[in-house]
Each structure stands twice: as structure tokens, then as C-alpha cells.
Length: 304
Image 1 (cartoon, rainbow, N blue to C red):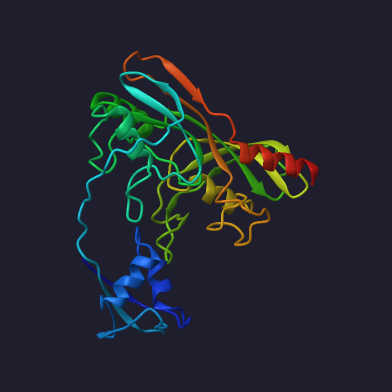
Image 2 (image 1 turned 30 degrees about the horizontal axis):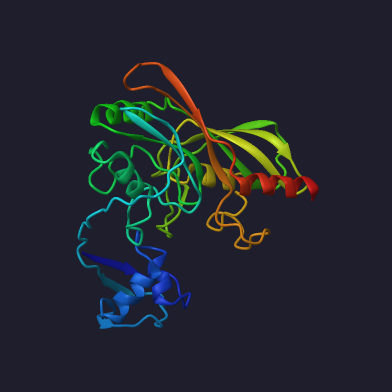
């Protein structure tokens, strides 16, 4: 697969960094190897990682065709909230990727589900995402539903499309929110220049609605509950940042410097999920307590 880019500003950025900001699902180390193997051309000539781009440069990247890897079942401990013959509800920990992707073909939730459920996972989303109806980010913790058969998968997916699933998240955001509650109704799409980020995009974005409610205020931060009407990629992170209150720990949409040592990624927890059970037709809710790191942060902020 060949991708082409024209540099529109003279920022002097290293080409590996420039491409890493624009090519989805490819790591910077992978791009550096591609550059080393003469897979990147600027103005028709092979360049290496230390080349710095200039305005008007024509870049051609030759990406090898992706080969779908075999996903292996791994006996990974799972925090199972609920399980029956149709669905399984997991409390996902921080730093766990939901399904395999470039750079993450082992240690994912899917690897663990395959070991736990054997052949009892829906196949609608293909071999890389068996059972997966929706996902949450690697650094987001909390409730996630997976389906064990295609009938259950279709039923839950339809509820997601109809926005009838209840999803409540808990987050710590920068700054003190004055209003007790509010709503962000702003479409979300890919960032126009940084393809690894999302942004408010009135022209090409998809409808996105987030309700937020203040739970506790601190001197410099606010603890909030967010309820999703829609489920766009990075929705809460983008919407809260658009209000001037990015999530604590979110280096993508917030400050690059995190005020608490050792904090990995955004402080965001999927605390509650409510769904109509695909077999019984009854509405059921599942919840997961705040992780220890999150509770410790709240205690620190209380004492700040």
C-alpha cells in the first residue's frame, strides 16, 4: 500500500515524527525500520529517519501489505463481573488493549477471552476482534461487554446504534467546573492534520453528545460523572478538552506534563453499563468500582 503526503509548512520536523502523526495504527519504531529499509521517498529519493521535512516536500511511503496474524489464546487473569451463555462482562484494567492491532498482538483482552471462552465468542467482527462489540482505550478502566454468539452480538450492537445503552464514566479533569452539570453536543471526527487524534469537526464529524455532572470540586481539579449518548472514539476526552477541562493524565488532549508522578494515561473509568439482555429482554446494569490508583488520586486531591 502506498501513501503520499505533501508537506504544507516548513517546520523542520524529523520525517519519522511527521509520518507518525499522520499514519494510523503504525508505531514510530515501525516507521523507523521502514525508513531504514528504504521504504520512504522524498521528492523521489530514499531518505532516513533523521531527514527533516520542508514545505513542498512530496513524501511517498511504501507500506507492506498487512498480513492478518494468528491470534493466540492466552491464560490472562480476567476480572469477570458477570457471565452467562450469551454475554460476559469484564472490568478491564489500565494498560490492557482490548483487541489485537499493530504492535499489540498479545496480552490483549481478546487473547484472554479466547482462553477463557474457548470457541464461545461471536465472529461478526472477524478473527482480530472475536466477541468485541465496543471497546475502551488502553488507559481507560472499567466495564466492557463481550458477546459469546452472533445473535447476542447483533442485539447489543443494535442497542449501540440506537444509543439505548446506558454508559456512565468517571473522570478527573483539569480546572474547577463552575456549573453543576452540562452537556456537550459537538460532532467528532479525525483531526485535520494529526490522524491519530480526534477533534470537534463540524464539517466531517459524526454526532456526539456527552452529559456531565460534577461530583466533587478540588482546588485545581474536578471529579465528574459523564454519561454518553453516543460512543465516538475518544469522545469524553475530546469533549471535556473542548470545554477547557481536559482529563488529568491525558497527554494527547491535555498538558504534556502530568502533575502526578507515575500516572499512566487519562484518569477515566467506565463505571456503569446498562443493557437489555439479548436473551431475556430484561434491562440489566453492571458496575465496576473505581480502581485503586483513581481512589488514591482523589484522596491526594482532597488534601491538596
